[in-house]
Length: 308
Image (cartoon, rainbow, N blue to C red; front, side, top):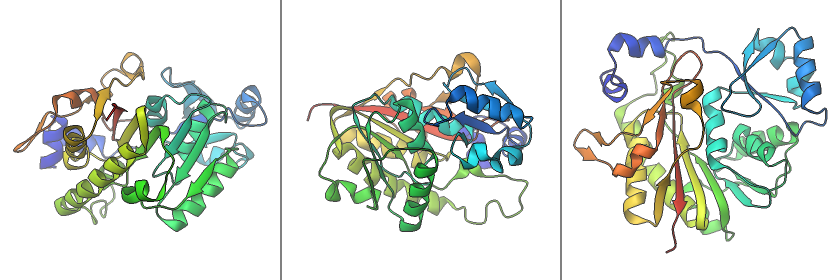
């Protein structure tokens, strides 16, 4: 609580309240569905459910009604609509994929963000999905098949060494990194923090440094890298990015997702300082998504690779 009060700039009561919520369910209508978008909307309405447009995400909605009704239906089972918290819609939008590009999702399982990338380009890009954990890779394959995604490749390389195994270089790389998952904590569960420790946060930070370096090396000059986590600790967010900015040819870019207009106060700039650490000032361009009634806690930063 002490750490989160400092990170959020909030009282302990406010922090506890934000981590003790039943969040609204997010839905992405799948443009790759063979039914067509209009038919998917009708099918959801026939279930007695409503969709409230987000405004900042094409095909992104908040669900009105019971999540289990949608999850048990053919609309979900047939890959016509994907259920996910709306924070996790931001990375693919920030990546800004375009048809004809080569795109790598480096820590892709279970596959929701891979499917979103493919939907944004209408399966018109060469999308390579990787995950370093074999059982998760099998889940990724299931999800991408279910949601009508055409993959160029699916591989099982550890993200921190992926540049040693993959010879290709990409126009865009998404690194939705393995992390301590603080943004998913529900304090109403008495065991919510059973795996949490500052040492675990620190250990993930070192792993994420290596992942970021590998991701950067897999980019073509001028290519885009999006780094995201579902955690709060600066050790896992600003710290590994600051290291990358110091030692590799990258720059921070604006995130062109119009959350501010539709959900004021939902996110904040990246931190400049934490304890005795001072981070690269460009990380004010990163975004911390605060947990609330709609959003899970999240972090996103967009970078461009410069010429060597």
